[in-house]
Amino acid sequence: MIKRRLLIFILTLCTLALLVPEDSMAARSRRQKPPGEKYRSAMVMDADTGQILYTENANRPVPPASVAKVLSLYLVYEALNEGKASLQDKVRVSKKAWRTRGSRMFLEPGSEVTLEELIKGVCIVSANDASVALAEHIAGNADKFVARMNAKARQLGMLNSRFMNPNGLPAKGQTTTARDIAILSRDYLRRFPQSLQIHSTQSYTYHNITQHNHNVLLTRYPGTDGIKTGFVNASGYNLAATAVQGNTRLIAVVLGSRTPGIRLRETIRLLDEGFRKVQKEAANKEVINFAGRLSGQDIPVVQGFYDVVEVFKIDTIISII
Image (cartoon, rainbow, N blue to C red):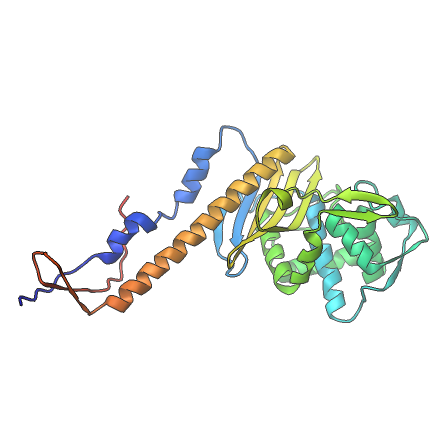
């Protein structure tokens, strides 16, 4: 038997089917986007690893709108974990909370509502009045709560964000970025995964008034279970979304869409691209592991020029396009 050492580029050949150039996702996105800005900034992140799968103008300042409520909820859940508050706390609704405009759960001034109900109002129907009531209960007043919001933002590494109120209503100087909201969302889900049980609820009834969750992605994209929509004129339509497929959870942030339909469509597109990239990388890893197990072994050849070939693992992967 004639034995010849033959260098087999197993990994190179496999890349024909499995590997995608690093910039292909962005290139494909550019091809799919017709002329005209569909959103002002966006980011897709792997919630488990923190890997950035897509980014576009991720540091561009945009008013957060109601996506700011994710940070408010972060502080509320943190207080619950630390034993500084309870879901059954009775929260007295102030006139300031009652007068808050925009989306509401229609709290009555002077009434007492459990903290749990207020959390549901914020998570499901984006209640601005409930956000103020929570802020006053947790910190004593809204201004002190906002100071805590900004301190927490700095602690989390949200370097380009500044918050002026607990609900995201228009305010001079209030701004964030897609990167900062992705950072916030990842830590929020890591620390308070139980919050998704509420964020994924599609409707909420309080005092015989039923309102629906603004996050229509819950019914339009399999595996979606959060997190928060937002809109003010200065920003456009915002969304911090999360969805899970298999063992992979992604976070997609889209800020400044022109319409809710564009926001929905672009978020779906970005999630699709993100999951495809994760699946592709997982397949690549399997190929590399397989080649490693074969390295150094003699592989018999049937009806070939050589009887046996020896497999070598190579460190450099060459993509053939």
